Length: 205
Image 1 (cartoon, rainbow, N blue to C red):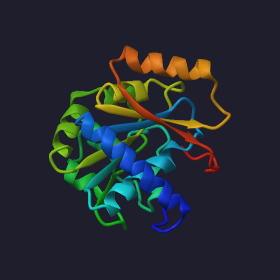
Image 2 (cartoon, rainbow, N blue to C red):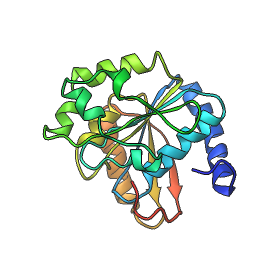
Image 3 (tube, rainbow, N blue to C red):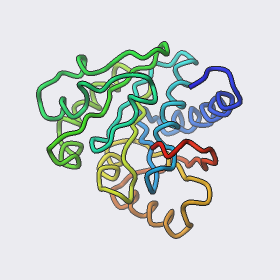
Image 4 (tube, rainbow, N blue to C red):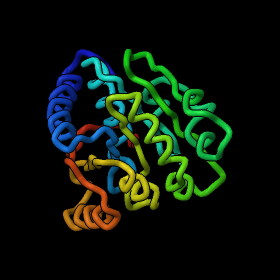
């Protein structure tokens, strides 16, 4: 997550476009997902968060992947406690939200849970968390598992006011993208845009 590079410039341009879309739709909660794992959504979520934070926006990154959380590694944090602990009832939000090395950027890490992640993410406690954090942050960016692997992402897209779809170049067919679109729309989710990712991000996300 370098502040100065051609990659940083790319994310600044993306930030400008996203800000217009989010403002038009009055959206604070953005789910970032993909059809399959390995399309780079986790790295993209982190870099979008950095781009907004560098502009002075207060941003919360939430790792809603309770099966294989990775977002904490990307931002250089730990996940000793995190979202799974909160949803299972033994931590308060203010305890599990961490500051990062980037000013204005905060992280709520994911933690592996023995309970069913889809049920936890679909719970009233998750709704309560989102209602609370939208009053404290300008943007909430949520990294989730991929759409076609498990149901977790569909549960979360129904809770967010917008979904950003990351598509790895030459990996996903048009038919699969149509299936993803229909799946999101079936739960009343809203796709506000997509990113064609051509970078080699070493399988992250």
